[in-house]
Length: 207
Image: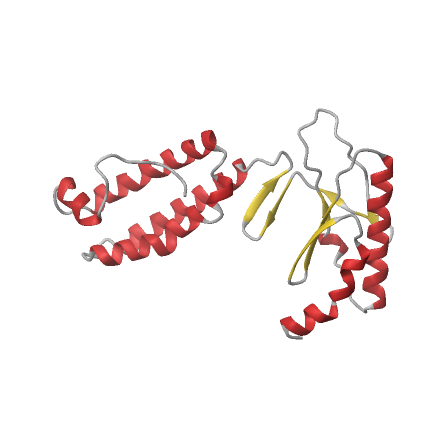
């Protein structure tokens, strides 16, 4: 089924969620509701029952084992209700990865930043091991922008608001980057810096 036909096929699914926030991406669905008491808990459970009924009518099978519940909060005593779909309890998670971003229940992104730092460092090491004989600065910069910088900058506008942890992560990465640049340098670092277009002072920031 093409993307357009699939969108038309599920177009009426919005009728299930009056009063809820919901997001659709391909066959992925997220539903959110601010829960302040038992009334909202019951409303959420009722919505899940309607969703299962809608899927049954439209001959669409839910992979309930992959359905999860996460409560975003910063309270000491949040409301952590149990929910189910067709009698099967939904697992509760502390964090979830969605479209390449790791979301934590505290609305922080420390786990995501650690993940992208680790991924960027692995890619940086891979490029270093496989490009030691490269002499073209243009090629090195193109590889860095394509495989390393793209990882660091993914969704960085919103995530970059959490400054303290970001700075720590970026400082650690900057140290690793400068170390590798120094190792692949075949001339004075000053001349290499000018060829690569690096600033005299290392400015760390996310844009």
